[in-house]
Image (cartoon, rainbow, N blue to C red):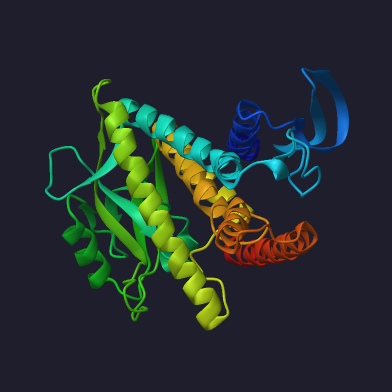
Length: 356
């Protein structure tokens, strides 16, 4: 329950920060903002201040900003979004994505100062072998092993226990007892847990008998004066990885007609957050930062109903020299929104099948 509340809270913050970017840039450019809503209707109460209605709504998940002219109305009114030149409309649309990236940079910088997980290539005294990936539906997944678990010992069915010092130790124990139940003692946070697992005799390509990826994982801390620079580096890497991942997802979706198993929706995010929260505050900051990057990149995809889709119409307008019919644009955005809802429901269905 605590994890669910935290996820709703932080995702709401990410959405509100995104919407505040639109709100602030519109006001700075003199475009009228009609309403800034916290949560979604029905409204609980609202108040007017400087011509803007600030509403507090019943559904406590994110928020919205309503800008005059965003659907093409008031084209001859200088306070309307529709009346502004392309470059100003682009700034207002892109400001939400910028704010998500800015927030991610702040979170990554804080994480760098507190200490973030880092894979090292050579064994260092006291650095445990940790799980850095679990394949869906693998023996490790069924046993309950999760990212960040530190493998301390492994025991065979004959009672022989081996202290784990390297990746080779894990592979040797696994290979010796294929098809037989073994016990893995792993540390999750400050708690030592016991997992009973049977390594597969044959396994899918690239997964191995257990279905885990392992490495030496340590915590690296940056001095306060270097943390913002390291945060910026992490932001750059996160954006690149997110763009590459989305490219692969869209490729699979259009070429194979299915959502890849690795894609997670709201349910998958909840389960992943539950695992991350047990690893410590710095891990959770990184997780929220990555979600903020994902939200920013997703919103800038050239898909109708998203900010990127609206930017695409601005590009068409610039090329053609005149604006596309607002009625046609609104219809296309409505269709795009419906398709996004269907895709979200499909991903959620896969989440439920995978996690229950």
